[in-house]
Every structure is written in structure tokens, then in C-alpha cells.
Image 1 (cartoon, rainbow, N blue to C red):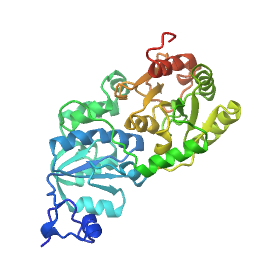
Image 2: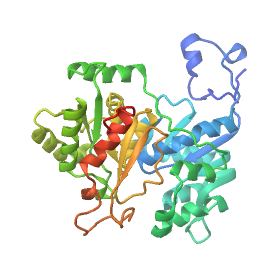
Image 3: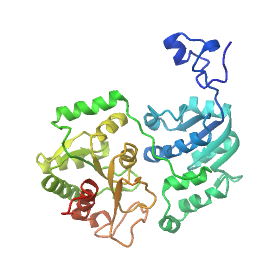
Image 4: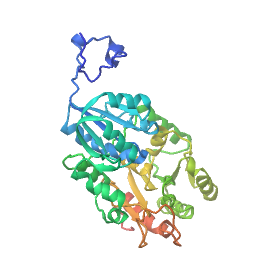
Length: 375
């Protein structure tokens, strides 16, 4: 006999339990009936995909026997490694699309108003759909009234600026889940933790060192999300001189020139983690920091998922939408045009240039030394 309804059934190959122990369906102690079939569509961008994992605890609590499938772009697949709350992750490629479109789901969640995500939601067969789909004219439309606010925020900058709810709260409400909001799910394997430990050992980091991370990236869409090189350098010197901290420098390929400048001008101030790490190595190295200073980007959500303290810097994007789970502080540029969501800027000084290193250091100090009378 074969348990076709088991969540571990694959069909084209043995399940892991049979492969390892030889157990068969008739007497398998791991037999688990797959309950409600849920599809989650979240494609762009990696940071948004990661913070959307905050829905998973609530979904699994409401549907404990559910079989949850997530479809996303191939570049985001590593985000789901070691995540026990997702049963299957499919790439936005022919094989993933064929699989999704050949099945019937009990619930389909699309939390993105993009044409591609909404098209996929429109094509999927599901008993219930939440989030966004396409209307008869091929335009993005809410599946229900609970998604109307998010759509208005996507269309009108003034509505987005006025919003005071976090992204996690908004997508939870769209999904019909009760409060509280869940946390981002990001788990490291023992091997990944060891990989980070090897880097620490090779670079002279001790267990009792105060390690602060500086992430210099800001994504591609809004180039002004990045803080200035000069501000980053000044803050690093404050952290070294006043806190005796060790400074880890993080970034991606687009930050190579910026981080090289910081390493050169810092003259031994920074420990460079490199800009060509794969996602999982980046997370393993990020885990070495007790606190991360970052703008609104993937590293912010990763640090939140790793339960790190975070000082987050905001200029052109919304600080209100970001959830730090009580472990961080937000430093918002002191300019009237903050949260403009403009891709370019001709204001001088611009919002990120207006953020003072002493202000950021004060936030770092409060988070790391809350009882220090010198703060």
C-alpha cells in the first residue's frame, strides 16, 4: 500500500524516511496526512520574500496540518533552507509553474500587486483567494476588501507616507490571520554556524568581543537608501573609540567599490566579510554581529530573523512599515521630504546625507548599553 495523502509522498522517488531507514508506508511512524493545501505567491524582492515568512507561524497555527507551497524566483530559494514551516518551495520557472497550475489549492495567497504575481494568482485554481489578482481588464485588483489599503499604498505615494502599520501587520490582515504578527523565519544549520565561527577565528574575533556589523547596501530600486561612506566611517570610529567594538563590514557585489574605500580609509578599522558571498554564507557571517547598522534592505530583515539588535536608517522609504520586534531603533532622516519613494533626488543635502553619525551612535549605545549612565 501507498499513503498517497502523506505530506512526504513524492511519487517519482522514495521519501527521505524510506531512503534512510527502509520503512514502508504500511508501518511508517512518520505518516502525516497533508491537510489544507495552501499556495503562497511572493516573488520580489529577496528582502520582501524573507519578511513575508512572518506569516508562516500564523498560518501553521490556524492550519496545523496544512501542506504549504511557496513559489518564488530562483534567487530567493536559499531563503527557505532549514525552514520547517514550508513543505515545498518551487522556482518561478517552467517546472514550478506547471506544478502550480496543474493542482488545486484550498487557499492561494498573493501578497504582491505586480502584474506577474497577479497573473499567476488569476490562473491558479483555489477554493479561496486572498491578496491580489487580475480583473477582467488585466489590471491588478484586490481579491477582497482587506487588500484595498495595500493596493492604495502601491498606487498613491501620499497614502504610503501616511501609513503607520508595519508590512507584517498589513500582510497578516490581508491573509485573514489574527494578531499578533509573527516573526521572520530564518534558521541556520550547524554547518552554517560553524562556517561563521571559522571566519571569526581566522579574523581574531573572540567570544567576548563586542561585534557590530555595518551593512552598506541599499538595493537597486532606490539608490539613495544607502547611507554615505563618510557617515559610515565616522560611526565606525565612534564605535571603536567609545565602545571598543570590532566592526564587521557587509555588502553585496554593488558595494565592492564602497566597501573597498571604507577598508582603505579605515586603516584597519573594519573586518571585511566580502561582497561576493552566497546568501547562506552572508547569513552565517551576519550572525556573528551582536548589532547591525543598516539601511532598509535584505540585511535588515535577515538580522531581524536572526534575532539581532538593529539600528535601521531611513530616508526615501517608509520607517513605519519596518518591524524590528522590539530589538532595534529607527533613525529617520530629519528632512520634510522623507519617505518620498522617489528613485532620484536633487535636494542638497539629500535625506541620507542629513543623518548625523552621533545620532546613529546614540541609538547603537542605547541598544547595547541600556543601563549605562553615560548614554
